[in-house]
Length: 422
Image (cartoon, rainbow, N blue to C red; front, side, top):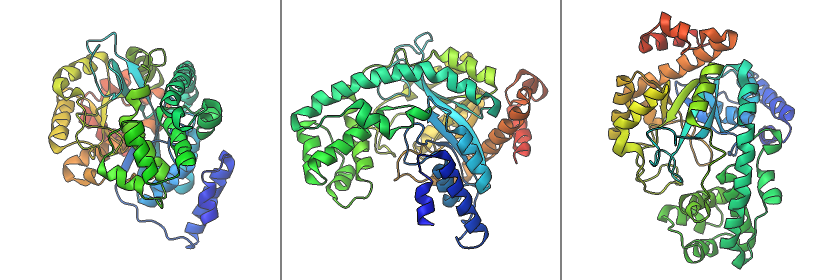
């Protein structure tokens, strides 16, 4: 069993899926205890096609063993892991949904010059396309190819900046030798800032080892603020996920020291919205909200869109967004109450998801179990029903003109598509 679980992250997709088939057979025979499946859902699971400890197959296995009822793939600028994710869901017997996340330029909108939901840059917003019909996977992949290429040009320049910060202690990171092998770039994946920093983390450990030397390097050489929680993780030389914790520390406080603004790699928001409409997907604004004590540990205290949230909703509604996606564990009750009220006011579909890209993160969002968030369970089933219906006929997409004409009331539409999920 342990060998098969390791094989779920093999370089060969066929070996990954075959390992899952064998594990499922062991479950069916009673050789492995079957997990208790509840009503929990997660529509925002990253895989190795952006940054994650998990291949699409391993991600489905982790979701299944956590007791999730459904699982959704969500990679940055990449949909290349989607078919594997779908197949893994079929093997294990889990409903799945597929989507893509990207950073879009809002320079040509009233939001120009604002810090929105991106910690690193103004006039750029994170957004997602959920529930992508399967016949349009390749179209999405082709759309993002030039943006991924542009991103890698900037990645190389940022590695040069990082080396200026670390070379004085003998830590040098090479993009082709150290960064690219940590990604699935050769198979259609993207390379993100997390890949850069994970490579740096590995090189720091290789050069300095683990423990207090690393903490001192972060504080004294890089002049970083390290929280007591992260410092305790990094002081522990037996920490099994040490490099991921080090990555989190670097992501929180080092990015601003080497970051180069993303320009050509960010499609115009109107182009992404047009793509979503063309392929029958569901476009979603990704709400972040002002950050206090970061749940994920890789975001410092910072203000985002909360100060002008009413105006933001007017803009995204006017642009034609279909939905807003948010994570109940990331925000305060007051933030969640406000965002949900605005979604209802502007008739925007609400989609939840727990951002998974670290081994410390739980696949289940316990905050979502609050009965007040029961609509998010219905929404996930409706999302799956939409994806299945639109895969059969794109005219049956949840936000197609014909569907909206037949079912103009959003809540009625949600209940209809929920009934289609299987």
